[in-house]
Image 1 (cartoon, rainbow, N blue to C red):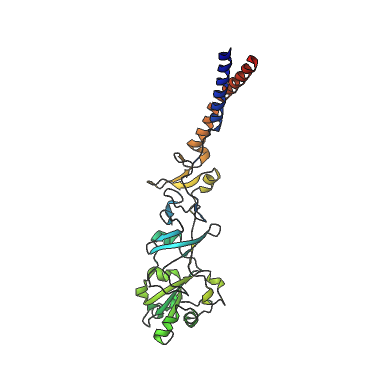
Image 2 (image 1 turned 30 degrees about the vertical axis):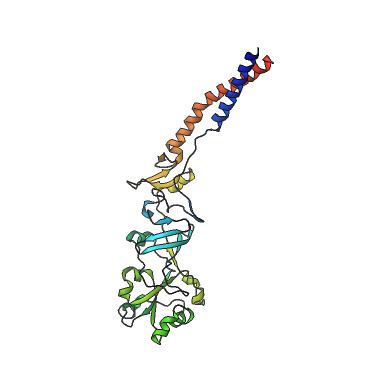
Length: 300
């Protein structure tokens, strides 16, 4: 009798454990695209993982342990923020001169595709400083310089600690030029014959604001390719592309992708087939478990 009582007890426990394990198993979708770099959200069209985002923006961002960087032929620029509603990215060049620090001069260069799809915004001003009297921006190309909200070279050199050096060395006010991205895009600092540059953004809001309070850095305006990404995102996927062909893909799981959305992908079908195939088996387990419980009660 003791043996008869023991068998149902073991069967009951085994069935219960197996049932719990089975019910706890469910198909999961693992995204291979990280959506944050530190505190900055990474959404389409950008990515920090190859195969994610839009192929036009491939390898433009790099995420370190502390910062997000925008990569260009002239160097890496720290990303301060990305506004996906306004489609702007604010970056800062750690090697750029500002009102508080004077850095060795260098050029700002973007690749051709970067210049086309994520150029500096119209309200980003490049300021060429300490230009020689032979500088083309003071002669043949002086039309590229424009009035920047009433600000002057004297104000710039007089207000900023780092730029006062230009004033002191020349005993006069060296020429400067407020210009747009197109100027530095086509002419290097050597051709421009200016020793340093800086850049500020939101220039339309800096009228009456002194150089000490200018927003130093660059604001880039990006475009978003129309590849049907919204449909993919609504289905729970990440917009991406095939790393070999650069054809658009909806990334739904670590091992399964779709050309349109996750609802039409293989992992969605897998989940549905899993539930369908599991249902009869779960019914059987419930019946067996109830039977084992009833049998145990009867034997008592």
